[in-house]
Length: 285
Image (cartoon, rainbow, N blue to C red; front, side, top):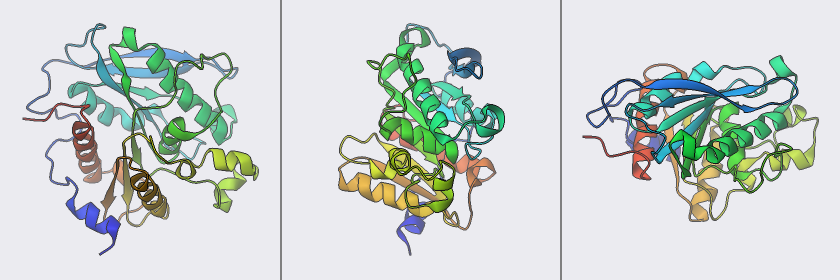
């Protein structure tokens, strides 16, 4: 049995929490969601939709998370991770979903998407006090291209937006990556998207920058996803460097599996278990 299959069979598949269902330890009451402009590029303002837990106060210091939708750096919508954000808010986190520039709407290529991800994390950290967030506990999460830019926020050198305060870190403190692209370098179809720029391809290949000090990460893949070896590579390098990296695998399914039942519920449960294990969520029950 492969490492991916063995881990997929054993890692928390039975956890009974699903997105939006709450749990015995969830706070009672309703969540609230507000929108904020986090960036104003020439193409128009970009917003974060922030969902607050029941009982939230600006004086809190809760862990935060920002989700980035998938869509091949060309399309996508902030609705993709609405259920997962709601689940984490009910568990006590401040959960944001970030809009970012994509090719179909703003005519950009992947490096602009990475820049926006870094801007979104930096905005949350810069506004942590008013958002009731602990600036040392910010998670970046996302699916496919969104998982790629979440990981790049942690590892990519440069690509910071002009005018932002470099003293405020854009590096997330933990990662939750749903079938992410983790390597451009050495993948011709992906390199074509950036005009074959070798320097940029290396910069936006997170697996090439994993090392000591990498944030704790959970990576989730279907075993039939052609990108799955990237998850294996990342986890192996992170563990070799002494970093926390966990792999969840879904047997017999391909790319985008986490968007559909039963895997939406199972991956949400696994995400919850991971964030509990690193102290970002309280233990259920």
